[in-house]
Amino acid sequence: MRELVFALEYEPGSNRVADTLADHPDARIRSLSLHATDDRLWRVDHATGTTAALADIEDAFRSGDYYADCLATDDCGARGTTRVLDRSDGTLVLYSDWQRTPVCESVPHIARDHLGDGLLFDTRHEGRHYTWRIIHSGERPAAGFFDALETAVGDCARMEMLRTAAATASDTDERPSTLSPKQEAALTAAVEHGYYESPRELDVGELADHLDIPRSTLTYRLRRAEEQLAKRHVEKRQGPEEPAPPL
Image 1 (cartoon, rainbow, N blue to C red):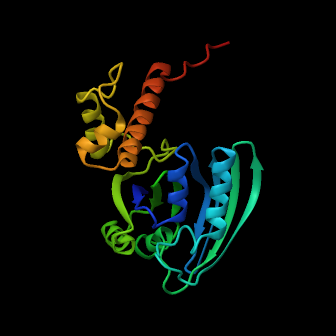
Image 2: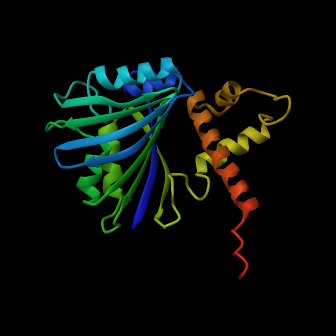
């Protein structure tokens, strides 16, 4: 088995959910379950955020011009429904069902076409960044999938490869075992330019301008790099559990 991990960074105005999350930087959406057949897609998503953010996320799913996972930029005629499964303080669980049309494209359907059946999907959506993790058999090359995805995405989003490797039993989430080159470059630039000094010598907006990348992109890369380093540090300190002494 192999895994692909990549992120799509949507341009403003090209994806209703991404625009909504960009308006609420602390909100997050992660998939709990995602399945696709040739002509359908259904998924369960868990969203976290403020009351206002969750209300806007629900509205984006329910009233978008086209289904959130569809890569079309115009109404493709697909029929979709979204229902609330659970709502509580700070969380929202949504069930979505989408029936595609011949002109619809989505990441899961492109993956099925090029990587085969039996795929497992895991997603995380924050700001304009939509991170995908796909587990596949590895029997087909991934190059065709990425070429088709790049064509379908067009100018609506930029694609960033985070990982392609053998999947192991210890892989429990989408974070790569090492920083991606772009995460490494962002972290190095942040250190070299005093972003982590106290007080900071420049803020994230100034660093983004220096690197000539969007502020949201830099924030995303730094957050992902910091998450990996923090988790790795804690895991290293905890170490393997000591076996229980014999009775």
